[in-house]
Amino acid sequence: MLIKLSAGDIRLGKPIDFAVYSGDGKLLLQQGYVVDSEGLLERLYRLGHREGTAARARTGIPSTIEPSPTGDTDRNQLLFGTVNLDRSQPDENPTTSKKSPSLPNLRQKVEFFHLTRDGGTDALRMELAGVIPDEALIARHTRQDAPALATGMVYEARLFTGSRVFKFATRLLPESSGPLGCHFLKYPEVVSQAIVRRQHRVPTSIIGQLHTNEYQRPATDVLVENVSSIGVGISAEQDFLIVGQSARLAMNLSIDSRTRHVEVVVEVRNRRQEGGCFKYGLQIVQVPDEGRRDIKDFVLESVAAT
Image 1 (cartoon, helix red, strand yellow):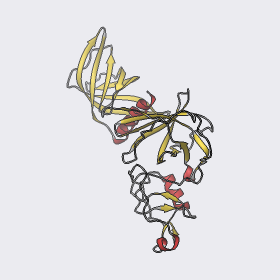
Image 2 (spheres, one colour):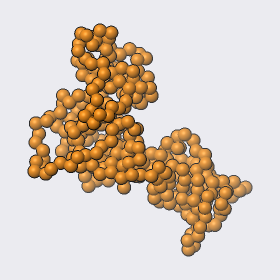
Image 3 (spheres, rainbow, N blue to C red):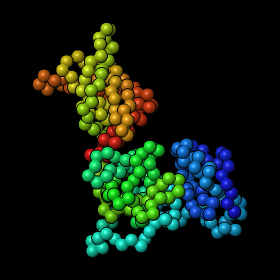
Image 4 (cartoon, rainbow, N blue to C red):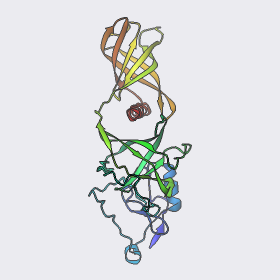
């Protein structure tokens, strides 16, 4: 039989050691899924059930999930069944042969999943919760105040996992709403992908302030020309830094349509002059954990936008 979840059954950031079901026996979460948000945790305690000791014998609900057709199972895969999917809709281009899509499995962490309206520029930040191979993607908003997905709208999706960026077109499926605030999106027919090097450097045009350790020297305005997770490239009209010198760089980064103030300790690794401008390569040597996450998110968002 199924029993209601009790306090302590699920912990934030820890893999679940059992499958979670709705009250009528539909699978909500696979065993091994890692719950990483308070909102999802609250909904699970409100709606979720688990197997009792006699569940398999009395209800026929399996204690393990059959592997997907690809043969890959994933501890972070979230499945809700396909009860709300309308498979009666014909293909939009039935005469066009489908190319085999190449979406990743979810063994690796999905760093971001963004949707952009066809022809638009503002990205919707989503969480890819699961994949039903050849049928649907399951996604939910990462922010409660995010705009709703529009029925009939074609979205350009960008997904980053491992060392690859995946791009494809998708749209809401009919009757697309699922449990726990999720939506069903059309499984892509064509997927393009590109490899991103580990320390990807993105071009920027940000005004920052550089503080040296020189006594009574005021902060100097610099142009931040590129950013990576380990370094920054800047330019300035003054020749005021030498290789090996330490300094403090402050800058504002736009992440998910919000501004984050980041301060890092840097060390000058190289210097060159181009015309009347001086360019410096700075290595990040010290940064708070929150600042490190902000820089990483900024780089990934920038990669997604290109």
